[in-house]
Image (cartoon, rainbow, N blue to C red; front, top):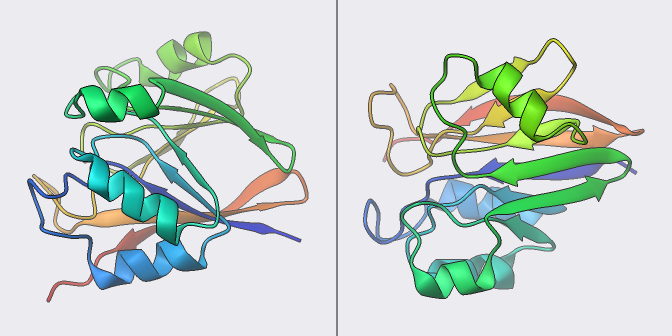
Length: 168
């Protein structure tokens, strides 16, 4: 059976939004696994994710204080149906990112990250897939707010999609 994933980062609740859009909560509730790459901002959002998610993997970001840092790691490694994931909030500047991350996460097939609010989907020369889902609440210089969905199917990552958050 394929695993349906939702990838999120930079939710910034309640600083950038009072709550996540209903569209995002629906995706979270339907997913088999949710991966959140940090900048939750306040612990009640983590509590709500834990309540609504079937399975949640998360790390803390630079805007997450002591309570979130006590509950979440800075980096995370998990194998889902044979696919080796790593997750961290910040990867540094875009220039050289693939090579730098390949060296930092040699055991990973996929690296999920956030921080920039800029969606990113590339594959390094060595085969590391780098994914940044953007932000579902703070588009910054992007045309829309976003998150990602994907599947793990038969030991590989498939169907990665950048999803636009509908404006109200």
